[in-house]
Image (cartoon, rainbow, N blue to C red; front, side, top):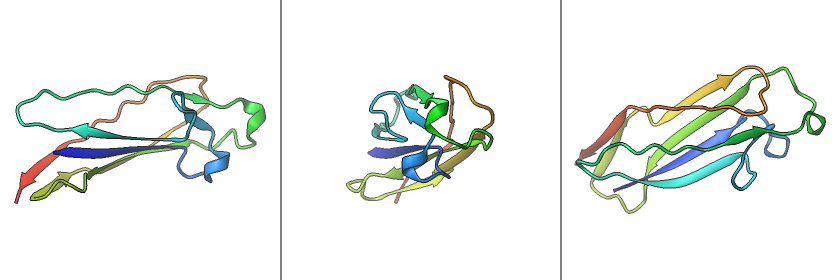
Amino acid sequence: PDLEAELQLDRLKPRPSRRVLVLQGHQPSWQDELVVAPGTPPVCSNLTAYLRDEAEFKDKLSPVALSVALTLSRNATGLVLYGDTLVQAQVGGTWPWGDVTVVTRGGLIPT
């Protein structure tokens, strides 16, 4: 079965004024399908995000809010997703680069 993952960067700001973008695609969000198979080891995905130039936004003091949401794909029948399916965090300060690691605990239960 597949999981759909969605990352939102600077999610508390309106979309046009978000301060952090994913390097690939230059968008404030990222979506992908994660394949989950019994007996396979966990897979790690790394994304690089960057802070837009200071001249492009006014708010330089409020923290950047991030969220990652996991959902079952529409074709995953007979399964229930349990555990933390939404993880939110705030990053303080302004960095030209940075690493954010989000770890979720959960799994699939056959119904």
